[in-house]
Amino acid sequence: MMLSAEAIHVGPFMLPFALALVILSLMIVYGTGKVLQKKQQWSAETWQIFSDSLWTTLWVGLIAARLVFVLLNLDVYLASPIDMLKVQDKGFHLYGGVCAGVAWFLWKNRAFKLENKIIFVTIFSLLCAVSLGLKQWQKPHSFYPEMQFSSLEQTEIPLQQFMGKPTVVNLWASWCPPCHREMPVLAQAQTQFKNVNFVMLNQGENVVTIQQYLNKHHFSFQYVLMDSKGQLAKEMKMFGLPSTLFFNSQGQLMDRHMGELSPAMLQQYLKKISNSDHLK
Figure 1 (spheres, rainbow, N blue to C red):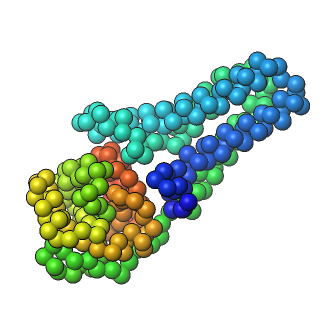
Figure 2: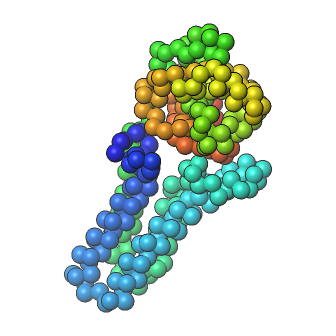
Figure 3: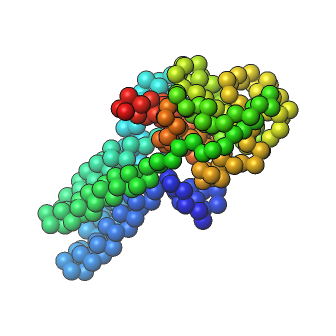
């Protein structure tokens, strides 16, 4: 098991911290319900409704979180509606999901006493507070590491060279299926966002393999570099491919994404690294 800034990694599986907090919150609610059941002598029917509603609350919250995110980025998703189903892009609106989950839980347990409702809503409210605090704690403050990588022309290029413009650094390999699926997304974004550097940092492959892959699939990126030993992944603690780092024009790491990027998620990150420059 490994911990990154965003998730708990167990083998090939990844549990985002936000989802882990939701599950922990439901476990706390369940435990609190067991105490109140004995103290207030709930009927078997009341307990059954309560325990069943915890499971459905999780699903209602997840579905609502996805729907809110999709609606907020509807223009992007309409260009490729199938992407709405690709939940692996991690496009979820945490607070939209929590609000929907709380509303569903209270409706399913509307026969509860007011004091019980206050107890359960307080637990969910604390979840929101903890999640907000966790996001601030996770906020990266690092800058470009002092590293340089070879281009396909065997020129050494330092990462600091990309300061001056927002920059996306994508860690990829030709053998990686999700890397291949997100390549067109990054290629399209490079065409649309001229004010952003897109750096395709290959992991562990040689010039011939990389060039053959790019030629075969007609991908043309301005910056294709080689990280033969996975140095940047180790430095930034990025587990698995594809992984993407987002830097603002000052070279500060603003966010990171592990896994396949959808157009909507990429647009969210690009707005973040661009807006951070306007706020300075």
